[in-house]
Length: 494
View 1 (cartoon, helix red, strand yellow):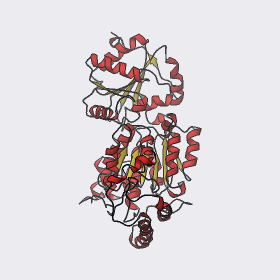
View 2 (view 1 turned 45 degrees about the vertical axis):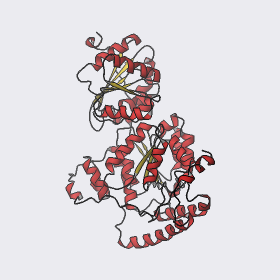
View 3 (view 1 turned 60 degrees about the vertical axis):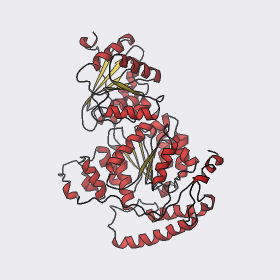
């Protein structure tokens, strides 16, 4: 936004009597040195030292603070660009009368307990409330490394526990690392970028559950929602973690409502999808606004490791550990996959009969195009099927309400496109139906990953017609197995 747009808000901001920004930053640098020297004598040692060859946490904070001091003269005191506060960092809700002894998990061969990771008790309390006892494969592989401050790039589908893996890393780091007594509003310590609104909201929901005893502040920034309301959230208190889509995050940065030069941890989720959706130029601008890779921890997750993703990872990370969880070990073992051979004219009647089966209690129906999604939604409504729709043409507020109704069981069917469907993380989905086979085989894996989550089982049904049957071959190559095609049972065709 042009500078004049930001200036128009300056007059309404109440002036502060605090010292100018550069003076405050100098105080931060002094406090950091004193805090580190004092805490080194009394603090419990971290699980392991900072990554080799990378600046320590204290050095990173001091360098970032010095950078702010150098440019402080160009940042206005009382404008929308940045607000000032003397509030101390909140220490979090105390885990009153709770100890890890109340969360007994037996040792199990080949499994990693969350107890074994040296997590902060406040974080472990949230994990206990969620009933998580043992790490998933991606968590067991990545957490011992990321909790020590190392960068990581992970290949994993949704539903594998990768969201919890990076959230646990972020929360534990913020809880155990010192922060200045004086901080500024609009300066997150951690940043999570995801490609879709639904995925951002799901990450924020998971963060609220995992971090409910930590006292850490998490703010979501997504397009399609009221900007001022989101700005009010940013300015309501010190922000620890921002979860955002690239476009809305750039809006805040360009209007100087959010500054990223103090980010200590950067998470890039579903990097392959951001590449497919054309977000990489925006993400590059965002990454350039954060401290250099030697002065931040970076975690990058992707469903695939194409050469483009590998190149980006090399640019954005510092000596990362690479972890791969193959899709066939994640989705197909727990999801019964069926492919029905039908003509285009038979698809809708087959769909209707499947939805009327008693076992089809919670169904996600995927289509390839927005117009097809709307057509299916309207047809199902006329057939008295309780359903909702999420696609790019639906306003964000309505999409959020529809997804909430589906999670609560008020809707039997959710009709979705692939872009919107990436953020659907709902337990208990009984069926995923591909009304049309996806053109990108990776989308097939993501679609069927909506069911069979968290150790449960599910059913995936794909319709293959004369128009899209050829798309089965690349899907089978990705899965590493043949999908058996069959005619639908007679009772589903009548």
